[in-house]
Length: 352
Ligand code: SF4
Ligand code: SF4
Image (cartoon, rainbow, N blue to C red; front, top):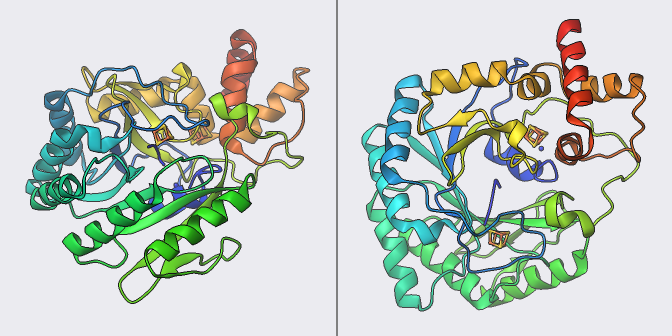
């Protein structure tokens, strides 16, 4: 129930662009938001999911200290992903309360929307979150890959809209480009359950709407990284246009093991993208670490194409071209021998 869910995700780009919609003018890592992943636990087992559901929960006290430090540092926006973040309700409530107390605001909770057993539990949990001051939105993933009970998704949408009294409190993120017919069928069924109209996935303004709901649908390509690498050919014949990480990048993404990444893009779990830990690093220190991390600083300051060109001039031949820059980032971190990658990064750095 993930990040991410953000041009917004790499294939998550349409979603991420929506979530992180401040245009970045400078080519440097400049985090705009903290995104917490308080737990890796999830009630689903999606075939494309890259989250190992084995980790310990993110300690609340450490997260709270980090929230405080980020607030003082000027980062005011907070989001949550998982696993399924509603399995960490105490965490969501604490950070919501304390965020509100500090004048911070919320972006999204990314959820599968089917984590509850009864409607009573659903109402009670969402109401608790509302009373804690959470005033962000919800991103619910609905597509061929998320095997949810759509009646539960419809209940989640109805109850959330009722509690927050907002017709657009929920948006949907959907994978496109593969198994689209199944995805469309599910969205149509969800619209029927809500007695609403589904405008269609091909439209830029896809939505499910009636007089009570306005549920925007954001579609993005499946990012073929991790387990999803077998679900789609990542080398789709064209190089990505987006070079710098303007969408899914520029956040402090805090994983449940307390490590921090500069993005929630699909390759973020690679060790090379670690910029520190909230156990020991202040936001200032994380920025310094990001600057000193040659991979992160090169991706954010020189761009992925500069790395690609340098590797090609060193004799690397890629299997094809890809439109997905997070896949390319994943490929670099998993398939290019680290000494060669490091030496190319140094050359790119010297040229810049
Ligand atoms: S809902 Fe699916 S993709 Fe999201 S964390 Fe759970 S298993 Fe992974
Ligand atoms: S750093 Fe890599 S994984 Fe993260 S957003 Fe940029 S391209 Fe994607």
